[in-house]
Amino acid sequence: MIRLLLAAALAAPCVGCASVTRGTTENISISSTPSGATAEVSGLDVPTACVTPCVVVAKRSADITVTVNKEGYEPQIIPLTKEVPGTGAAGFAGNLLLGGLVGMGVDAATGAAMDHKPNPVIVTLQPVAPQARRPRPPRRAPSPQS
Image (tube, rainbow, N blue to C red):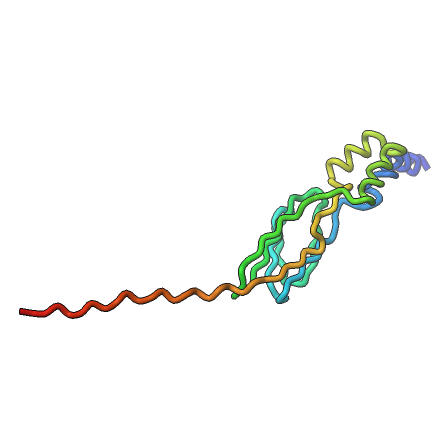
């Protein structure tokens, strides 16, 4: 019984926290046209690569960049930004009622009130431009021998 009361007392400050209501991670969907490209996701604890279409799990606080590559196409680099959506703001505001400074600190440290944008990441790859042939230098006429 004492353990239950202790657990409730510790959890009470975070009942309105975004970290409790939304979690500290989110799924980021990545797709490309054409599909089958390699998406390299940097900014995670462990750099991750997947083949499109795919989904990666990321911490809301992470600074993420997605690089999409496929042979025969120009690579695309997409930096993701972090924004506070309405649901994140509501969870963060819940700290004013129940979580206080502790809940605000937890949300700020974990980025729980944030979402990455764009999500889903949708990329249209452009074919590599064929290299123009360089003109051959003109042939020199053989020099007359005397």
